[in-house]
Amino acid sequence: MTSHPLGTPVHIELPQGPVRYRERGSGSPLVFVHGGLANGDLWRNVVPHLADSHRCIAPDWPKGSHAVPMKPDADLSAPGMARLVVDFLDALRLDRVTLVANDSGGAISQIVATEYPERVDRLVLTSCDTFRQFPPRYLKPLHLISRIPGAGPRLGLRLAQAWRLKPVYTIFYWSIIKKKPDPAILRSYLDPLADPAIQRDLVKFFTGTGPRHTLKAASKLCRFTRPALVVWAENDLWFARRNGKKLARLIPHGEFELMPDSRTFIPEDQPEALARTIRLFLERTSGSVAESSVGAVGTPVHGSQSGP
Image (cartoon, rainbow, N blue to C red):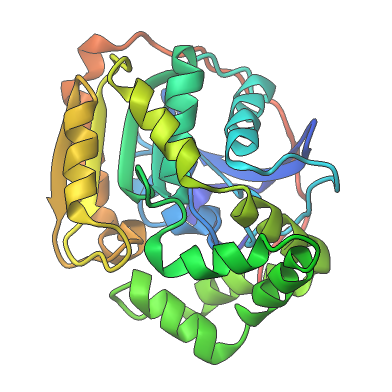
């Protein structure tokens, strides 16, 4: 990808297929989990403010804006994606980490925190899918269409292709980013969708979402005893603020903060403010977490760049 502030691109082979990531800094590890139609570039202006004291790892998860497709038989359902996160941690020899998530990445991180709690030291959730909002309300009709028996997969692929049409992506990104998006970053998010295999991965992930997964996670979050921070966008058009507050109350050591002048993609609208909020949270909870084991594996991707 194009964002040098995140570090040099590296790829690692997982059972599900190759995952590309970038990392910067050293210290206790922060693993960033973005949502759909985004990639690690989402965190490009957040990571530099945290990398002086933490090892910041920003993968490109297979949600439609990843450059390298997964294996055809990869399980990209919500539980499968949670397993992918854990397999990624195993591959990097990371015992325990702080997960920093946004959008559908927040739903996946809730599943990781409840199904694999021994791997999560702290949890930072920014505006994301919760409870019955998975996928969010505006995408539920598309979700139903893409799950029609027989015709669903074909319709899903057509919908995936439609995201590259300017009227579609302009409205979509306007609804989740308050500031005007950087054209180069939009290309980073959208160009991979020209590949039919990437479209396939996006459809598999999208059709594999469902409120049963977030409701199951919610039923277990009351037993997640690690520190958690929920940061919600003040102007979020996709996710209800009341759900963010409810989520923070549900977690025994949960905190809630409202981020002004931002929509769902808080890392795009308020990266410095978000980084400050995360840093303060990490500092005040540092005494309550054990140091995670830190390892490093992977192969640099030579000449790997996103966009034209």
